[in-house]
Length: 429
Image (cartoon, rainbow, N blue to C red; front, side, top):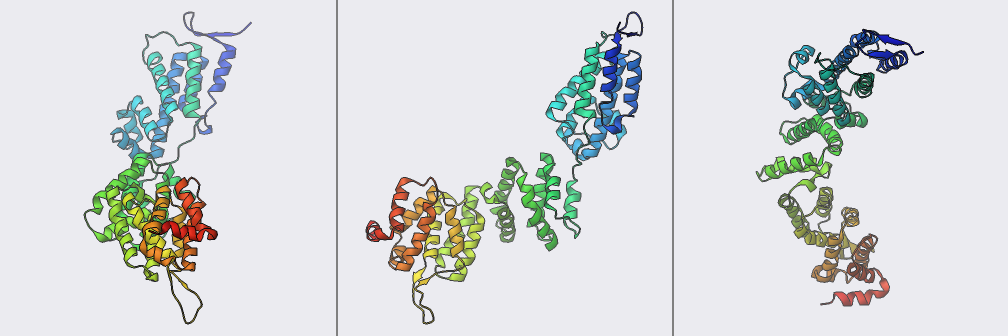
């Protein structure tokens, strides 16, 4: 016959086998909580059949654990998220409700969304059965469920990774002891809540474009900012882009130069407005147009344009493609020392090739349009060496998938040396 444990004839009856199951569940917690005073007390009252008191004791263990985890994670962030001013454990006891504790723990990453929901249910269970003595007696199933949920979502879970203090971390970046371990830096950033990522990103930008930054600090930012950028939500990237849009029109050339350098590191120009990108790209394209055949300048400016990325405003794509094509093709010449007849910037050519490899359909169409309409290019490709260089660019585009049929048909004629006459015929006015 199953042994029964009773407190009084009117109170709940606990089958001994169920009691054993509950006692085992009480140990399904982290090792450091086995001797927790609240859990010990829960065991004691459970043995006496006090299910109502067991619920209260167990909830106290959960609240105690959440408070400590929040303090370990980041009191500063908890206060920011919840609009509080908690400094000590006692402040939680005196000023923070269990509801706010759960919500704050969720917002700073101590609890998952699911854990938050379940803990609110457990809180209601405690409020009903331990907070209101006139409520009905909880049944064994209710107690077991609450204990299992609290164990699964809180008391068996390890402490979360502490959140770095943004100001302290940035201060450390301006020292020789800053650890440039990519995995460590990524871990520090990836675990930051969005509000801290936003603060970190914007402060780094502010320091980088400032006029009093040390070379050491600048180098550490250039190492760490791309890592931070990878884990930034799109909304923060867009906010930084809008911030730069606003500051660019203020006309501080040195500040703008530094901001562009930082955004280039992360392919961040794509987050700028079309107007700002036009202001950035147009002077560079114009410079390349005006310094055709100045090999040193071609090499320098083409590398700058390549670093800017492929987010050229649509109205400038044609000019850029035309300037790059002329730069790559070069001109026919002669030399007393060498037998070469193809003259072009050796420094610019490899970069132009890489840029052509990233062309989209619009760029490919502008390449065809340049060949058909640019008189200087038409004149230059009358030379065999120059035509062969143009064919090199054509082959790069032909190797791309998805180009339009009209573009493909024209380029196939261009690259086929057996159809040279047909090609010249097609570009003759």
